[in-house]
Length: 263
Image (cartoon, rainbow, N blue to C red; front, side, top):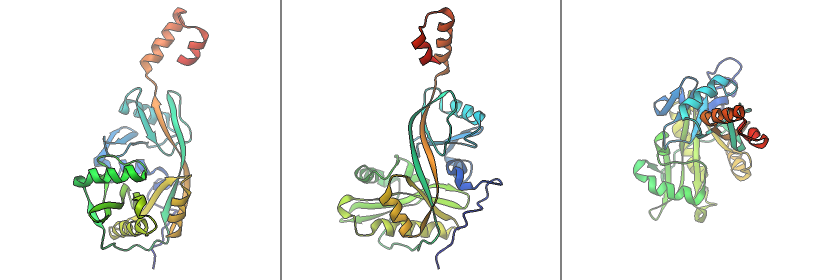
């Protein structure tokens, strides 16, 4: 019988769910050894996953911690975010969806092989051909990755990314364009989910809100849409530049248009 996932609990503070701020739950929990953290802000170490997280995205103090952590003028991706405070510039904004396992049939895939750091060059080659989402040179260290080969060539892959209390994210689901339509992605998702359940966690995943074919596939095999959220890439302003701009205004050296830009 498929495992049924409870969407109400999850070990988070009262009124919230641990999945509501999944990146923070991972970085402050099972993935703390992969984190760089300062106060109420954290991010994955270089080469793992290009996301940072805040204990509370509505807390200005957490954004202040993030500015110190990443440094002025540095771009960083964050989700979920409703509002970006002053001192940060939004460079890219999009919408993502989160789906959770409610009726997935999980099972091993005997023909799947375990992928690790030695396979990174061919993994990155497959990622370049399929563009499944963010995948860096060390992402494979975040969890178990499985692949399927054809005549020695890696043609499909799926694995684990975020790991938080009671939950593990399935990610990097991709199939070479020449081998689609054979159910390889579904087989790998089921196999990765089987490993996740074996250790007592529940699977979940993320997708871009406009990736209709992927969402339709996930829902057809037993995932349920849980929430939508805003994803942003933001850049912290260089406070030294802001101070210089204010000084120039006081000296009368900046015109009206430039004042608007500086502030």
